[in-house]
Length: 390
Image (cartoon, rainbow, N blue to C red; front, side):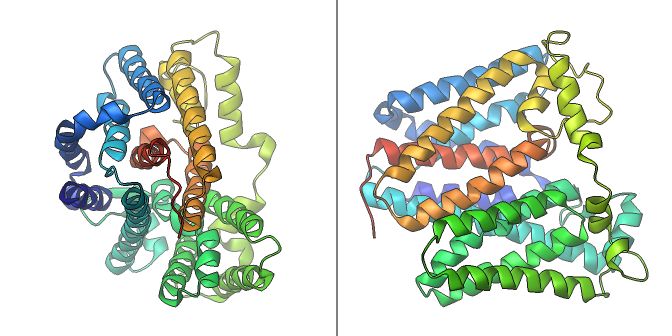
């Protein structure tokens, strides 16, 4: 258990980017793997197969990329192994520690996003002044790094997708946890609104649908309250002029609403980039960023890999994704703690929307590393054949 606690501390330091050393902090997970590697013999064929696919993805990406990106392609293996090996062999303890680790990641990611925003506002005075200084939707990180809006929303994404978890906490009458989740959701919604993130709106909408599914025919008053809180928050923001971007605040002049109202899906830069990359698969099977897209990235986890290193690594990554999804579905069918199911489902809302719409391994690889870490834990739970429930 002591090694597990050390690993959790490393995760906190990693997510918080202590002293700007996020990359180097990741290496601290390697000793854990070396200490616990003997436990790999307990792994199932399913886990071994998934691990091999992930290794093949990393090797093919590094080789085709001519040794570029060794760390961002190699680190997922470290996180996937650590997540699996760090859990104890006791079934009951394993699921409790998985839940603790997931909540730790959830709150630490949210905290980092809030601190970045608070630091920028304290230093520059407003979002508009911050954006003007950086010539774009970019904020100042707490360790001297710059954090663009895409990366910032990634850190807030778990809070934005927390409505299903909030509904469960309300039903269990866990007042303090419910209040904390509600506060984080409101703060993350406000920040996402001011940095004009359309991805955040999509996460919230999907989270609302997921909440309805989770609570179908159960105390629908809870759902109505949650949606009312969200709509009320947006209404409040629309009337709030203190942090408005620009001078006179109006619905039509706000960056987010301008982006939403001006969006033509047929001309969306993401969709155009996706189409161009797919049309040029035969022309550029090894990627090398040769497809003639008009932006720097495809804004899609899998297509960005296609664009950068070609078809072969993309196939391995797709297979890895499918295998982790299948394992998650299997664990959802088991008679285990309902809360961990809802928590993992909520986090997956964030993961897959972010993966579909942002250049993860190129801009914020931490999100994929965290995904691999939790997937490793979920595989361990399945391998222990958990039947634990509260």
